[in-house]
Amino acid sequence: MKIYTRTGDSGSTGLFGGPRVSKDDCRIEAYGTVDELNASIGVARSAGLDPQVDAQLARIQHELFSLGAELATPDPDDHKMRILSKSHIERLESWIDAHESGLPKLTHFILPAGDHGATLLHTARAVCRRAERRVVTLARLETSKVSDELVVYLNRLSDLLFVLTRVSNLAAGSEEVAWERPK
Image 1 (cartoon, rainbow, N blue to C red):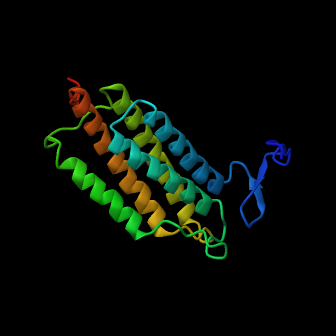
Image 2: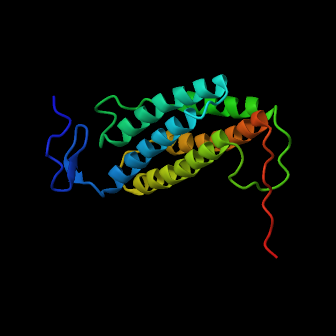
């Protein structure tokens, strides 16, 4: 099978179990940004993160692929594409709680800075927030059939990625850079 099909040369793409739509359709924007998030996490994983963090991110990458597949499916119930659930969100929350228990209390806003792994995780967190915004836009459409869990999952994932930036900086001995109000 060739990687190129030429079917998208006119600026359209096919949805799973659905019609062809423009490549700038909000559904394509949503799952495309989730794909970008997945790639950002892959880049962060290449920075030599703590093995436990790396294993968690590897699991998240599989879940993001599933999340993207659900978004690429106009009627996910008909195609059994509702994969992520409340239990996935609860697991993210448990990881956040576990990581936060070993961090100093946060008393100020921090800038996206620090060691290499932390800065890559900050980038992934920012892409995650954009993916969340794109999914919210799609979810507002009456015909979108986007489950609430997808928005919550992305919201919680961005929280986890923020916490992991702090974990990475602490492990590397890099101080967090506190935001200073311009004078």
